[in-house]
Image (cartoon, rainbow, N blue to C red):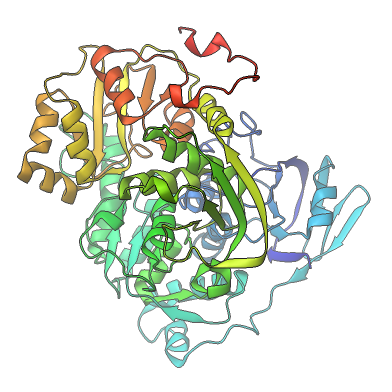
Length: 573
């Protein structure tokens, strides 16, 4: 049944893709240009066009990017999906509720969606979508299936203040869009909307703060866009640093804890198995569901505050047992020798094979991945898949949850080599080495300090570690932080690589290297720099020598009979 998710009219040219797009890291919030260098729509401008794609993917911050585009006049004329979608839809919903602006959002059945993608132009009104010979009736959403408690209704009626009332109105409509039958209590919230990705995010937060909003459940905060205490001394321009810091302060005023980390699972008192929580930040959501066995939907930015202000969330998706089942089994054949780069490459490829469903990964349980290995895998998976979790046979707690109709796919070393090539388009002379996307753990600080023992950063190379302030405090207490700084590395709390900006990001750097698959994906669009990717050890080599090899690691060498790799990867400049 094709649905009218958000009402509105549009008559515009069509921009279609068979691949989902993350608006955060994939679309310029000011212009609407697609900046994701790995996406088929790279270089296209979304403004004024009907954008058709299966669903969104990647970062929860996409809602804030779309909200900004709507407010600055560069949004798509309409959004058309073939699968359920929450992140971008929430951006439209907030624009309607708080700023009285909107665009139509449609969900088509697969057959008419496929036909639409072959068209050049479409027209949408409150009842139909028409394009060439395609004419589809759109069924409006109904709230009849949503059951509210007396407390929910009291919030909607404003009995606990206007801030909670506005939050509950957004939650109510989102629950209807997501097909939830009811709302559920959550024990904690992680706010991702504190990243200053656009002025609209600050406007949104200030509206609630001005109404006297206060969080009802323990609420942590994601990494922000500046070092909260030191951004002025670091030379960050006031025009950016002040609103970025103000956004963080606004959430603190509403009662959120200034944890400032994109890896809240590294904080003390991590969620327990089956604990019902509400997290934003894609890697954190995937890690919480997959590794910890907690339960959270992949909540969009902006909805996270609404949940924190009410303690209630729409009960849909992987809150439900049946939605946590694996619907694709991915058999992995890994070369017997490997390094820690494996986990980012594997997560990225798993996401490509399961872009819209929960997968089960088999064949790697004997590798005994560490928590940091799983962190890297989950983060990379979240860049290519919209799914909020994955299972790993013999490792994650719910790996036996398999749908009877699950199909199969496979990953070999050749597939991982292909991903490595995608990540390594830059020159072999390195100006910057980026660690900590997601934020470095204490164990990673120790490992990096061991690898740097007796060595120093090359004079022409900047090494930066981003990490949570709690992790930095622990690293200072044990001395690993001092060891890293003595070797020439810079340690930056509060911000992360997906939110870093100049001059903290070295303006003169032209090629960066990272051990993060997540950042290898996003860095070209976010930073405008070329990228190299490698293991932690390979990154250290680049850090102390200023160069990387530019060739596939030994464990990823092609098997006999495959065409030899191109020499393009070693081209300078």
